[in-house]
Image (cartoon, rainbow, N blue to C red; front, side):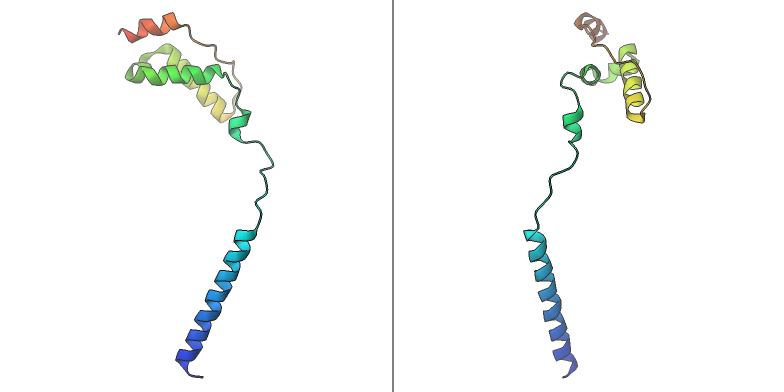
Length: 101
């Protein structure tokens, strides 16, 4: 056997192994996740999330809004795993007074 023939045979064997491995991987069944997703763990009416949305809608004004600063502190605490009091929803009258600034 010369070098060209040996290289061709090696390439054919390599392609055959790759096709076989691909076929095996495609026929493998996916197992269902053992734990529920993070979306399922969140409560439906999360007051912190509602407050975050309100602050998001305020835009640049949120940087000086004391309620948004408190919400962001609560968000940091929740992310870092620190225990803190739950955030109460903000009354609509309070947000109307900050929008006019």
